[in-house]
Structure formats: C-alpha cells, structure tokens
Length: 144
Image (tube, rainbow, N blue to C red; front, top):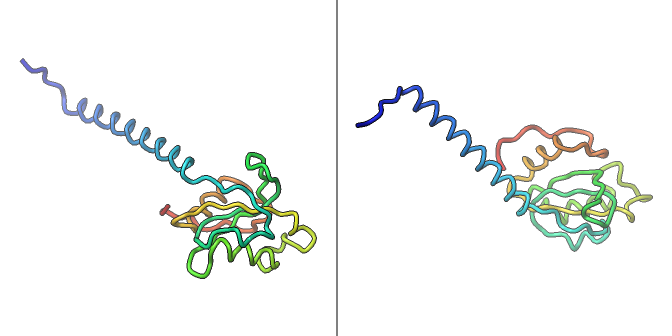
C-alpha cells in the first residue's frame, strides 16, 4: 500500500533538494574557476613582451612573491588589437594610468589571467577588491 503525501510536501521537499544541489554545484564551479583561473607569476612591467597576446585581465603592482602581490591597478584587454601584452606595453610607455610614472614603472610588476569575457571579469574583480589606482567601477555584467 502506498503512503499518500500532500502535494505541497512533495513540492517543498523537491525545492529544498533543488536549492541544495544548485548551491553545491555553484560551490564546485567556484572552486574549479579558482583552480583554472590562476594568476600568472608576476613579471617586471618592463618585460611586457613576455606577456601573452591574448585577451584577459591584468594587475599591476608590487611584490615578486605571488602570495604577497600588492595589486594597485586592475585592467582588461578585450582581444583583437587590445591584448594583455599591448596593454602592459602601453602602461610601461606611460599611456595608460596616471599613477604609473617614470619614477615607479621600473619597480612595477604585472600578472594576468586569460578570460573569455574580460570586461565582466574586470567588473566583478573591481567590486571584490579596492584597487588604489583604479578610479572608476566598470558596469555590472552577467556573462563570464
């Protein structure tokens, strides 16, 4: 003989299980992205030719030790003519951010992450951390 359960209990149980599965899956994706999207090791900004000619997000700051990198600026390279290498080159040539000057550019380091939607990645990262040399927040984005 079957037990008859009210429909509202079945729906409530289904909703709870669904939320738990979605929450667990979201956490798995978050951990996977952190593993996949790792920052490159920092390089001197003057060695921008060693950066990839791809789109992505980059940081400029101080500190060779990746675990102690002090990022001062976050930027994006949208692809096409705007690559991580070209953006770092522009910063080194002093045509990017006013905080990067002749006096400090030789002591600066850069690192990057390749990203399929650099504008969205940059916008999300700017909301998570305060970058001293960034002067504007980028608009919210649903992709990436």
